[in-house]
Image 1 (cartoon, rainbow over the protein chains, first blue to last red):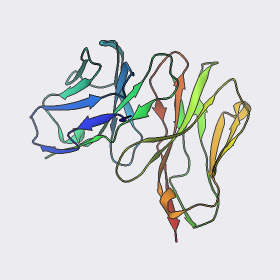
Image 2 (image 1 turned 120 degrees about the horizontal axis):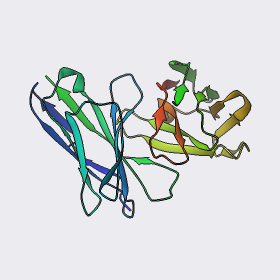
Image 3 (image 1 turned 90 degrees about the horizontal axis):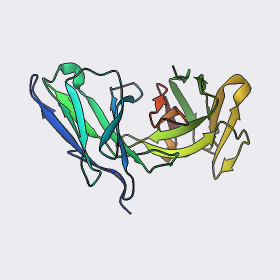
Image 4 (image 1 turned 60 degrees about the vertical axis):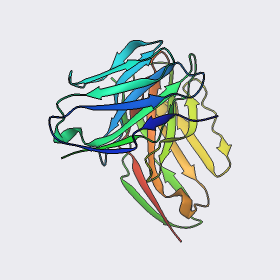
Length: 112
Length: 114
């Protein structure tokens, strides 16, 4: 079975632009979470979605938004990009009642 | 609030040496889960082990073992007979029983030299 898949793997954007990152969870997993990992730090929680509803939000500005689709895939959107948004964005999935959270390979975003 | 502290930033060993990674956590929850993840240069976080707070039995899985001590809020991880392929950043993480959010430590970079 395929793991958590994310796209694109690498991208470069200019300050002020908008970016959309995509994630497909492991088959059967209905919960998707997003994390931001700045170089040299641990991942920081951004959002969690379950059954297309937001179930948790981390301490990130409103420029960050997300949604989950009927097939449980998810998008993370970031508007008005800042240099500080440069990071690895990780998507994770788990099934209802599951205790372990599985991660994808991430999307490396560079803002110039 | 939850907090995970990994005091070791970098560890360098020669192949076949044992490596122990320290993790100390803070939480007000009585039921929670602790994890260790490995992050190679590719970026993917690879799940290694999970421990439930209500089970303090320490186990060994292949070359991995862990020491969970609830009394000192520590969850240490050992790689026995390290190999070059073990070189990566290792993260300790914590989540509440009723929340899927993970709180991570800052990570420990392990370098295994041939």
